[in-house]
Length: 216
Ligand SMILES: C[S@@+](CC[C@H](N)C(=O)[O-])C[C@H]1O[C@@H](n2cnc3c(N)ncnc32)[C@H](O)[C@@H]1O
Image 1 (cartoon, helix red, strand yellow):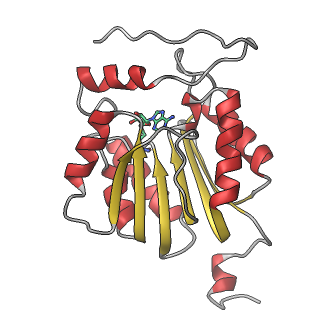
Image 2: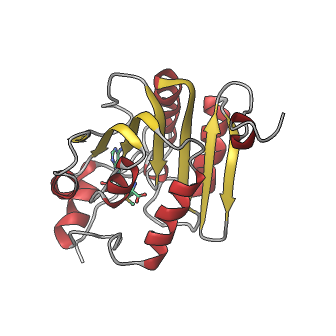
C-alpha cells in the first residue's frame, strides 16, 4: 500500500481538496483501486445510477472523475457525446483504452473545478468525486455546473456516505452543499445506508410520466 500525504487545512482553517498526487499514488499501487470492474457493490450502483437518469438520451454528457471508465462505458450508451475526465493520468489512460471503440466519447486529463471544460451539457454526473474537494472548490464546482447546464439539463450526484479519514467532507455534506449552492431541486433520489444518489434539475419540476403523457 502506497504512503499518501494528505494536505492539511488551508489558510482559512478549512480543509483543501485532495491533490492529483494523492490519486497518482493510489493508481500506482493498484490499477483499479476501488475494484470497479469486480465488485457487485459497484456494478449494482452503476445500474442504479443509470436507472435514475430521467431521460432516455442526453445530447452532451460530462463526467468528471471517471477513473478507469466503467461508468463511462455504460453512460456512453445514453449520450450522443460524452466527455469524461480524471485528474490522474493512469486513470485517463485506462479509461481511454476501455472506450477506444466509442467515437463519441472523449477522455481527458482535467481536474475539476479548475479545469472545467467549455460547452453546455444536459447531463453532468458527479459520482464519488465531491468529497475530495475542499469547501472553496466545491463552491466553484457548483458555479461551474450551473453555468454549463442546459435548460432542462440534470446534475447527478452519487456519494459514499461513510466517513473516510483523508476526505475533506462526507458524502451527505456534498449533497447538502451542492443543493444549496446550485439552487437546483431534487427530482429523483435513491437513499440507502451506503450511498446517496440525487438527480438535481433547474426549472419547474417535470415528472417522467408527465413528459410521456401518462399524467396531466
Ligand atoms: C472513486 S473514483 C469515481 C469513479 C466514477 N466516477 C464512479 O463513480 O464510478 C474517483 C475518481 O476521481 C478522480 N478525482 C479526484 N479528484 C478529482 C478532481 N478534482 N478532478 C477530477 N478527477 C478527480 C480520482 O482520480 C478517481 O479516479
